[in-house]
Amino acid sequence: MLPFTVEQFFVVFTRYNTAVWPAQVAAYVAGAIALALALGGGALARRWVAAVLAAMWLWTGIAYHLLHFAPINPAARLFGAAFVLQGALFAVAALRKRWLVFGDPALRLRSGFGLFLVSYATVLYPLLGRLLGHSWAEIPSFGVTPCPLTIFTFGLLLLARSPVPWWLLAVPAGWSIIGGSAAVLLAVPQDWMLLLGGLGATAALLRSPRHRTRSEPHVA
Image (cartoon, rainbow, N blue to C red; front, side, top):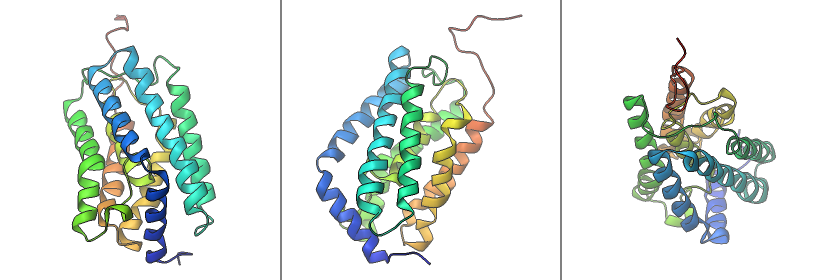
């Protein structure tokens, strides 16, 4: 039994989206920059893709979970802590040379899946919410709410050229299950992609072969 109603759940989004505007615009700009860098590769991509994700996870953990969702759901305090932890891990990843390497992905099918998830999180997710009868204010916003952010995160990680450390996947994978339950419990059918795509992306990333990057020397 949830400690809140479906109506209360969407009221939280309405109040949150209104309170943080225009953070949603900044999130789209940052997301576009991160995607362009991930596709282009190089040292800037490693640093800034991780930095953008760090900022989004930290923001969502504090501004959404702790400040807006916690008043109707005590579990949001734990969710907020997990999101802050994930943001901190991405911040560390921005400083580490081998944790995330982007540019010319070796696995084309995986990168195509990543681009689909990015498109879903940024465009299809809000459009589906609108088609299902919700106002724009009620729809979870890209980059500043948990479910679209998690889908977007998996999309970018699937574009990585190097294997992604498992500890960068634990919280997003966990949220894929927790947040994905909203597809049924809270009548948010667009979150089915969080459950299916998130877990599928986790499996793909964990099974990724340890291929070399161009900067690594060949060892016979």
